[in-house]
Image (cartoon, rainbow, N blue to C red; front, side):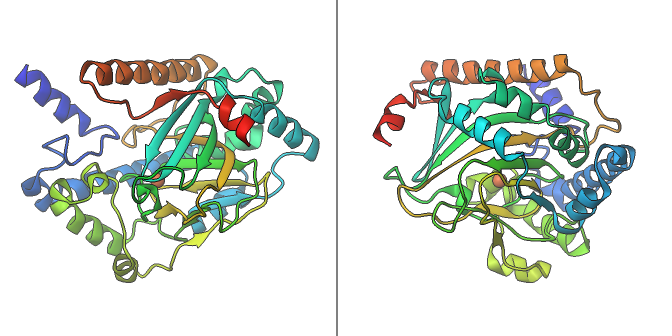
Length: 336
Ligand SMILES: [Fe+2]
């Protein structure tokens, strides 16, 4: 049993596993002092660059240039008006089949896109420009995993939403995107991003090295799990600017490399925003890219659903509530 666990920890070293707390090899202070985290960091970024070179033909140069210069791409009026209105109307009508997660005083509610019985959703999922952004930006030739997403700000009595702390999602380039179905303003918690913070330069390598020495025992549970938090003094040390909010109109697509520092902005209590949320995260050490087969996408969605079922089962066994709980939005819709 112990040998099996040690082998799992060892093999995780060659994957996107990032938790300093759960994997004693990744979290080893001695190993990290010798440069283990920096080795993984640099190798992952080099391999990602290699795959970007192979995949250049997947995305227009103007988007590639913007993505590498800023860490994000913003495309206003992403869909033709008629298509957007149809998508918006069909997705707002969906109330069943959501899962919700409580973080601080914020509720995040998501519904797997593939399960949405709406023609406009199926059309949007096949959008060539969207696929190009993910296939290239995610450096794995994958289509994104997609969800309908409702963010409900300040509706719970708990403390601060951890997503409102500036952070990097993991140690390698990884992508997320939102097609906003509502206007995003300072009031409803816009995504904020530190322009240029996706670059792995010498200052960032030194910063990551220092962080890796204390991550496993950090007071912050997200840092322990490999999602490093950044404060103002860190931005000063790295020579980076302050984060800027994406206050954008509905039908804007924001596509970001979330290795770069980002957070959910402050929001008025009770404010909401709705979007199509999309993400992809591949093994950063894999030298080649996947063939984007429909079957592969179906397997990924099935894997996600199975993971959720396991999580619900394990939570029930231990008398806990799972991180994501099933919820029906019919009542919320009627109240609105
Ligand atoms: Fe994040």
